[in-house]
Image 1 (tube, rainbow, N blue to C red):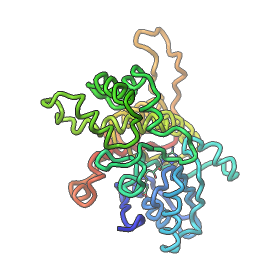
Image 2: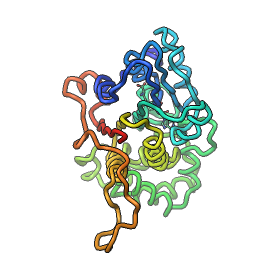
Image 3: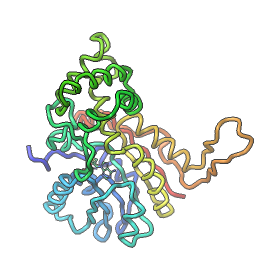
Length: 316
Ligand SMILES: C[S@@+](CC[C@H](N)C(=O)[O-])C[C@H]1O[C@@H](n2cnc3c(N)ncnc32)[C@H](O)[C@@H]1O
């Protein structure tokens, strides 16, 4: 399998339909990945439109460049190695004030899980790294070997919603006193040992999945990046332009839902406040009252789409 062979965009048709684009538009795709969505978007904005394709992972940028070159679409994309949370700075650098569409397809690509060898999958034994951006210094192994027991427990609980966080953190600290923990396989063994057998495979799935998710969120600052991108991305939209966000777990979806509500003018003051002090103003209209999910057919073709939730807003 080649690196560039394995990216099928999740909810590809729905993304393009909901972005509601026209030829000549400029679209910010903050999660370029293998350029799956970008290719679909270009079809809607060609021949003069442009995609600003933002990505933190230089390996993904190489793949996207190859894919776009092979499809003859590279001239329609401005590839930028940056964090999507820096949407304001990126647009300023390109001397662009407004955009006609904004997309985030959050999380990891299949390429990163299957082929990056950076420890994103709990089903493989690889070095504990999990950085999207290899120029960042903190890896998963640094967190596992250096954070205090309390800090580890809090991360697992907050970002993985793992009930056995305390046991797992305690066993990590015990194990690393013998030798540093460097491989994903070692961490998976500790997680398994920390959970009583009858709770190991609950309805919530494999606990390693939740602990790996928590570490990735912490290392890459994923939730803070998302909050900032939603606010600044909405600000950058032209009136009538749309923002489409695809998330893959409940922590992300909750942030998207709450941010959309706030942008649509919902007051977020604590209940019982005599008057609104949060400064709620109507900046957008929410297009999807309920999140859009993948059809059964898509889930069969692309299992990664199973947990996808897509929400859409429109700038007023
Ligand atoms: C699910 S993949 C995107 C796949 C892409 N939409 C496609 O169709 O090929 C998510 C990508 O976003 C990148 N990413 C995650 N957080 C990012 C951030 N804060 N800024 C820029 N890129 C980010 C990841 O490296 C990954 O390649």
